Length: 322
Image (cartoon, rainbow, N blue to C red; front, side, top):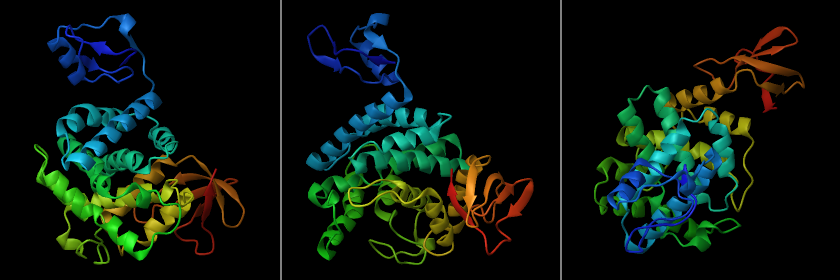
């Protein structure tokens, strides 16, 4: 539910603004002020309304980080993370990810998208509920350093100059400093902000660390970050076709990204696609019937009663999903 009007206390101070989705923390806050809502004060909220509400909250967190060099972690923990957690358990996660693309403010929707996808990867790796919550929160905060990067550079419609790209790369350092100076945030979240652009082969930044030197959560968030960035619409590029993203990530699974994490993620994504209609490179139309763990982007496809194992067919591959 969400409130349909501003809620004030007896002193006339605003407690809950209109259209905010209500969390348990909000209910406790209202109760502490002696405010008890009636059916006339609230209205049902759809999952897409919830996304809109989360975007507004995220924008405020980034504004505070930009202006004060710290994060209001209580707001993140008590208001934003519960909403993202609710989204992550929705049966149609893809609908939520698609709806996020309606926003021009890429950094805000990207933070939510990476949090959702990080949790998805964590589930594929059999993380506990406590680990999933910690990972999701770290994923949400991974780009907080971009609050310190000039918006003219972040939203530049053309290619960045070398100097501009060097400024963008500093968001990892900014994020680390912001999280380290914020009260109540686990230190591991700071390392995720710092390391999510490091790569297994040492080709990443800011320090060119190699596989064994990078925190495990950072590796997971890196996979989620790459996927969501590629499938997202940006001011300077259109989204990359879905299957092309999966193929490129699969090709990089034994180079820049951590192999077991990447393959677990691709398997999870492709499992969702079982039953979907696809077009093959030879023009045939078929249906995905099985996905292998070792080469998930080359599934078994049924075409007119015959089964084609794309992992064994070097001349045929998936062209696109319908």
